[in-house]
Length: 396
Ligand code: SAH
Image 1: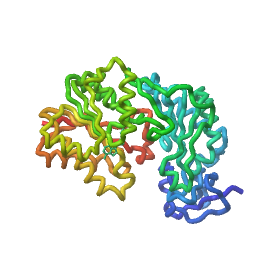
Image 2: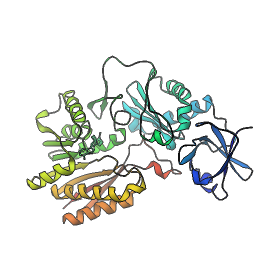
Image 3: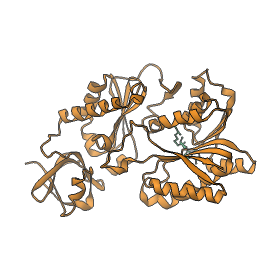
Image 4: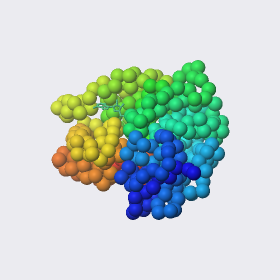
């Protein structure tokens, strides 16, 4: 008989709402034996509600693969789910021609713990849960079948694997390293993607469409790009006709990569770009002390609050940079500001930014709310999927 996860009474409600996470506090007991990543039946009373991956080390004790109690979790299941996720990307005409594309967005694509990004003809997977880790080969086969890509690289080195009791794991799952570096074109700009050492799977694909918007806003503006990483926003600003682009990041390797990316694009005027290896918090203060102003400022910091428990400290950090950002804007200037912290919701983020504008003594209005690109969908049953939120503000 298959192993059963017996829910505490009352805890079946979130499963009925098709939320894929079963927390330790919801589990009454495990009837039978399961190793990490094994499939268990989720049971309330006598009824099987779902099939899930068991993860004894994690606070998220199980992640649901299927809410159909009769669905068998086998290689064919992953073939179906991966094919459906890849097909879903065809729904948006904006996505069809992208060389950098997220193919699988974990829980929101019905594959908890599975991320897959495609850069040209190379797919990079990141497996972050015990269940996903167990089905590595099935997922790689399914990706090859659905995409026709011969090269699949694994970048399972995210910190969250530790919470599942998993060691980091990186390397080629299918095929081998391409001869040169991987270069994608994004809205007419070439960007090299370092799938081995870059952040995440090598690139911040979630900001792709926001980078396009930024380019469209840049004509004739003096742009300040804070937390620029490999220069994605900076290069779109140059392409969009910015008169100057100052980019700040504390990582010299990221800035070296950014400068190399600029060199890949001889159509852009490199004399308009300046890269500064600085701490954004300090550099914004220095710019203010020097009475500098800008027409367009981007604030795309790293995750200050990985979870709700970090929210207070993170709020202060967001407030600080947004306050300085508002102060540095010329009248009528634009602030494009983001939070990718799961622990900070959109309402709280907006409140923080409103407080920052107030303290800066500036009236500001939201021109547009911003989110991740459409290849990073958010399942309605899984609001946790909405980690990236942004505001485009005009500041008087
Ligand atoms: N906007 C980028 C992604 C930003 S990722 C894109 O579209 O690709 C966040 C970046 O912030 C990283 O490159 C990291 O090196 C940098 N960073 C983190 N803390 C910093 C700090 N205090 N000052 C400057 N840069 C910082």
